[in-house]
Length: 130
Image (cartoon, rainbow, N blue to C red; front, side, top):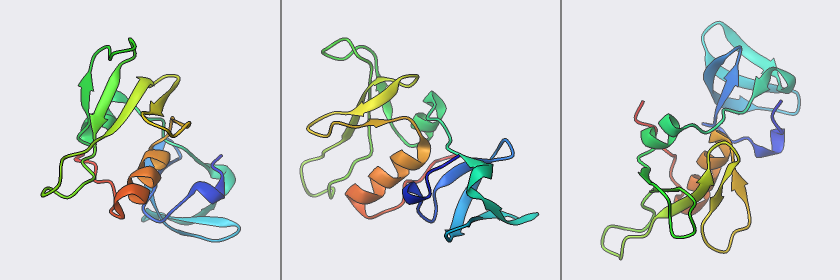
């Protein structure tokens, strides 16, 4: 089950073992972009766990063993190209949750969390290449 307060339109979630895009929601239902289903209950949808492939499809670059020994996933340019380039860096393991490098004490384990963070930083939707 997904906490409804974490959802935004455009989030990718899991329904019936398949990935689906959220096109809307209200207090009771989630509306999905699946032709055979108009809406489902929140208890029928689940978060999509972040995988290596999802990060690669989101244009992250994997760097083995960072300074503290944790693997690093670096990506998501979020400053204008005219400015110094800056990246969102995630450290740790995919299995145990990736920690946002810097002063934010939070872990990311699910795709919708990464999508929401990216939107919060850039005001643009995270584009997955696949």
